[in-house]
Length: 188
Image (cartoon, rainbow, N blue to C red; front, side, top):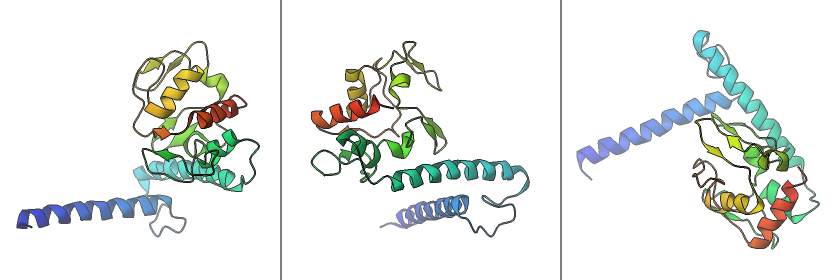
């Protein structure tokens, strides 16, 4: 590898390390910096409070998901754990295993703030709102139907044909599992 290649690789590794330290101190409970999480005190204290609030909501959500050990339907198991009717993890574009919709959309399916973005609700009432949806950034689409929700889950396309944010995984699930998940979402 050339000298430039080594330098470039070193800068990348250094950047990853700095990002890791920032993330660690954003979420740690025993942060040694004055001012708590993100520790900068003063003007950054608001950032620490924001990170603490996000972490609190995400932690409560994860605790609720972890406490859920019995499932009333295959759709509920998919929603909470991403496990299909055959007992296998459902593949997705992000390579996540053992997590389902609840991880980002909330155990109650009412949406939540995650990683600096608002994740929308998955309640059937919200999805099928006759007025449709306007998302931050101006993306608009009509209400979901069963078929358009399937396209959203599988291909990341909303009812108007707009691509969803790339943070939304594209799932590779069977028609049977899709139907089970949608039936479960209708109860939310």
